[in-house]
Length: 155
Image 1 (tube, helix red, strand yellow):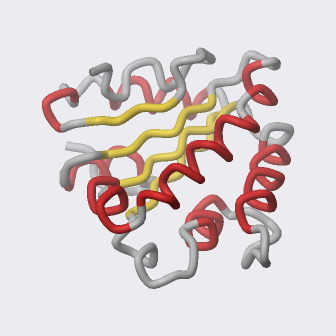
Image 2 (cartoon, one colour; image 1 turned 180 degrees about the vertical axis):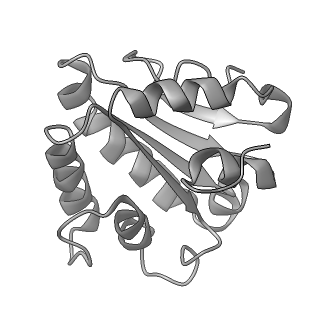
C-alpha cells in the first residue's frame, strides 16, 4: 500500500509489504537521504541461504553483520538482542527481505518470528527518533537489489 515510502523517517508504520506497483522511482531519493543521516540499509534475498538453514535468523544476521551469529537454541532472542545493539551504533536501520513471497510460502513461522523479534526491539530506535523499518519485497523485482545494495548501478 505504501511501498518503501518514508523509510528514511522514524515512524511507527515500520513493517512494509511491498508490491511492484508501489515502486515508482522516488525510492532513490529516500535511500540517499537515509544514507546521509547514517541509516544502515541491509538487503537480503531469502533465496540466498534462507531455505537451506534451520532458521532464517542466521543468514539474515550475517547479512546484517550481527555479532553473535550463528545462533544457538534461542535464535530469535539472540537475533533481537543483536538488533538492539545496532540501535546504539547507527542513525537508523532498514532491512529489506527480498523474495518474501517465497519465504511466506515456504516458512511462514520464520517470517512471523522475524516480525515479532523486529517489533520487540523497535522502540530502541523509535525512542531516539531513528528510522527503523522492516520491508518485505513480495514480488520479484531485480531493481530492488540495485536500489539497496551499495555500488550497484543505479538506473
